[in-house]
Image 1 (cartoon, rainbow, N blue to C red):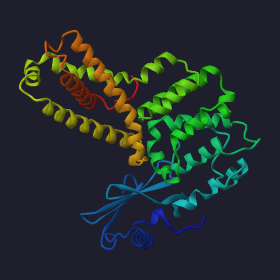
Image 2: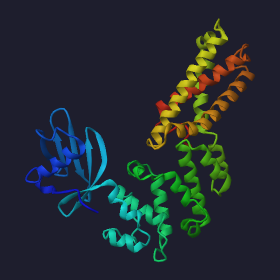
Image 3: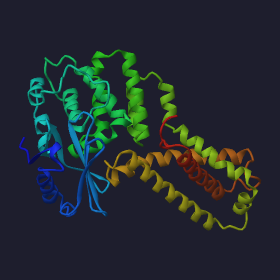
Image 4: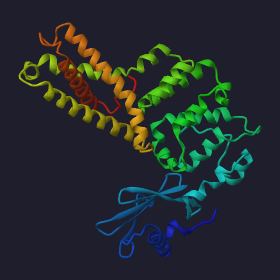
Length: 374
C-alpha cells in the first residue's frame, strides 16, 4: 500500500502542520485550515482545527493504532489514518483493505498484518474497522488447514454481528459491502465450521439470537425462515415473537383511551360521516407507515434503499394491522364500544387508532423497535 501522506503526530502543531493542512486542503476542500487555529486537546489524543464557524478534529484511539477524522460533526471515511510508531500515515480507503480481500491463506494475514495474532480470539469488540474486516475474512473466507480455530473465529464474528457495540464498525464496513445479516446466515448454516464444532444447545441459542436480531431489524421473513428450518431452544416462544408481542401490548394501550373516554366515543359515534372516519384512518395509516420507514431506516444504519425498506415493513404493517383489527372485533363483540360498536367503519377506525397510539406509546416509553422481542 502506498502512503498518500505521513506526518509526525508529535509535531502538530509544529513543523509538520503544513503537511496536515495540505491533506485537508487537497482532499476535503477545506478552506478553514488556512487561517484556522490548530491545537491539541484530550491529553494530546485529538488535533482540533477551528475558525469560529467550522471545525474538524482528528482523534487517535486509546491504543494509538488508528485515527478518526470528524468534519463539522460528521465522520469522514474517505481515508484510513494509521499510527505507525509516531507517524500518522494516510491511505486510501480502498487500498487499506486490498491485502485483506486477496488473502487466501492464514499466512497471508500473518505476513501483511504482523501485529494481528490469528491464534488470539479477542474478548472485546474489534478495536477498529480494519481489525474487524480481517476477522471477517478469517471467519468466513480463509480455507486453510492451518487455521484450526476458524469455528471460534466464526463464533466471535457472530457475536460482533448481533452486538450494538459494533454498530459503528458496520457503518464503516458497509462501504466494503459488508452485510451483517448475510454474515449471520453464513454462520448459522449446517456447512459452517461453527455449526459442525458446536453442540446442539449452542447452535439453538445462536439461532434464537439470530431470530431476535432479524426481528429487531424488521426482517420478519428471514426470522420466519430460521424458525421454520432450524432447531431452536425456545421454538414455541420464537413463533410467538413472530407476531410481535411488543406491538400487541402497544395496541392494547391504544384501545384504552377509546374504551375509557366518553368524549372520544361520542365524537366517533356522533354525526361524523364514514368518509371522515376513513379520512382519519388514512391519515393515521400514513403516519404509521412513515414511522415504520424511519425506524427501519435508522435501525439498519442507512444500509437499505427505500425499496428494500418498503419490502421489510410491508409484512410487519400487514401483521400489526390484522392484529389491531381482530382485537377491535373482539372488543366490539364483548360490548366495549357500546351499542354502535359493530359498525364496520368504526371498527376499522378503532383498530387504526389503537395501532397508531400504541406505536406512539412504544416510541415514548422505550428505545427498542416495535418489532423487537420482549
